[in-house]
Length: 313
Image (cartoon, rainbow, N blue to C red; front, side):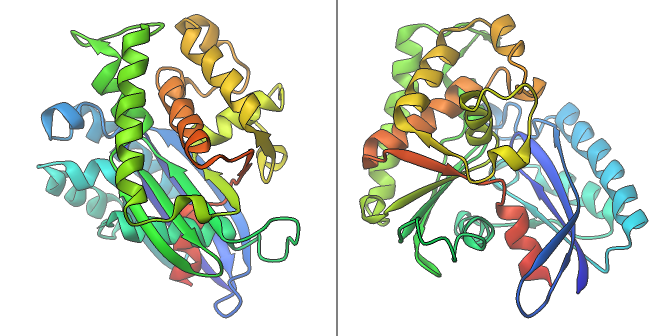
């Protein structure tokens, strides 16, 4: 077994996985998995630059992760950065800061690379489950972008589009820098329009409707699942491979978009860093399910981090 550390830095959160991985079989034993909401992508859609305060929040999380990696003695470390750092003019400031703290250079991965890692991480445990038909459609709803991957044992087609919970919130739900809470019907319609246009783009190269099983990843999906399951506290074991119907996703999405901040914040499983963006994230998931006619989504707690860890070993 090889002890590795994988770090995934997205638009909304930065996450760490330290695991022992068998280099031949890809079998993974998790030692530490954690997530910090840093909102690295704050304002990037509008300004094209990473904000100084967003960088400092991210570097603070990196210092915490560096200590964990040292304590657990990971032999190999890989840091991947996704949508926000792909879009930013000043991404060198981000790259230099991470290198100084963790001793590795962040890989600003392409959307296709992100999709490949997500597919590997999400489907590795599904291979022996006969009740799940193939091909899979793996959907990774991030803060700045969403990745769509269709495949059986391997990726057959993939596309990344700039539709994520943070990007949609900042683009359509802010007025003079202040969040409209709850959003007006025309704001929700504007988000829907962006999502539908993105789905049209994806369908040019990815056969979304050929998939037999929809697999959903990342915080928007897992939070919707936790609400659907009625959990009193966030429980990854209960959420992993839960199957949530499109009817329940629609109900939760409508409730989240109609609820004021205080009511969303009071949901027991709601991470404070997702309160403002969960409505847009849930709407992305619902729109995908309605577009392809999915009756349910299979929720996975395994994602890009697991794919990066296996590749690293």
